[in-house]
Structure formats: C-alpha cells, structure tokens
Image (cartoon, rainbow, N blue to C red):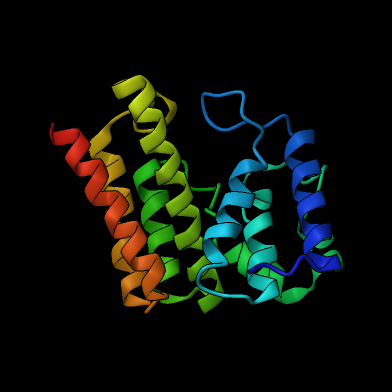
Length: 194
C-alpha cells in the first residue's frame, strides 16, 4: 500500500503540472499524460515501497519529454534530492542519439550495465505500463496503433519489450515485474500471430 507522503504528493503535483504545461497526452489520444507516471508508480509499488523510487516513477519522463524551461534537472534535485535525480537520469534516453535503434540500444546498455537498482524498477514498471496501454489500444484500433511510434511496426515493439525483459532479468529485478512483463509480451505475441 502506498503511503501518500508530503514528498510523494509534491512529486505527483509537479509531474502533473510539468506534463500539462508541456501540452502532453498519451500517444495518439486525448488522455492526460499524468495517467502514465501514476500507472508506473502503482506498478512499482507492488515491488517496492522506497519513496525515492516511487517519486522517480512520477518524474521519470520529465527530463526526456518536458522542456527544461518548464521543469529541469536542477529543480528535480532541489525538490526531491540527488537520489531521485540519479534514478530519473538513469531512465532517460539520450536525445543526442536520433536513430531509434541506436538510442534504444544505448538505453538497454545503460539499464543493463550502469543504472542504479532503483532505476531498473522504474524502467520495468514504465515498460509494463506502456505495454498495458499498447495492448488496450491494439484491442481498440488494431495495427493502426503502431503508427504512433517512431518505428511504425510491431516487430520493433516486440524486440524492444523483449530486450527490456532480458535487461531486467540480468539485473535481478523483482520477480513480480519480470513475470508481469513476460506475460504481457506473450500476450502481445499471441495477438500478433492470430
């Protein structure tokens, strides 16, 4: 059970505000973006009650997706401390790499070899929530869902989630997250083959 502390409540407010200021919604929908960080935090809460990790779940896309003029790394550190910033940075893709595959491989390498243990939990929870959303959207609109992504094809998405699964297994992520991601990948593969 999540204990809604003052810090966690502040993180929820900052995340909701930052993504709203950035005009973000879930890909291809009018669903407010905050649904994703909250979903990520709820998934992570099944594996940890570490407050810094849960706060990082709420802020995990801020550096990557919100302009620094709205809310930046320094503000994250000032509001939540160095550890939260470290976790968030560990799950932030490198914007300097423009090729999707190269950028994805760089992220996978970082998660596998360098990221802190808390970041592995955030990454796994993030991907679980994303895949839950993809499967839900796939049930509604079918193959059109792939047009929302950079690579535009299901095979790359299967590769991506399977690669994340391999990385979190290598990092000994909590079994509940490994099992959930594995089940979701199997569901995606079954839907694609039917």
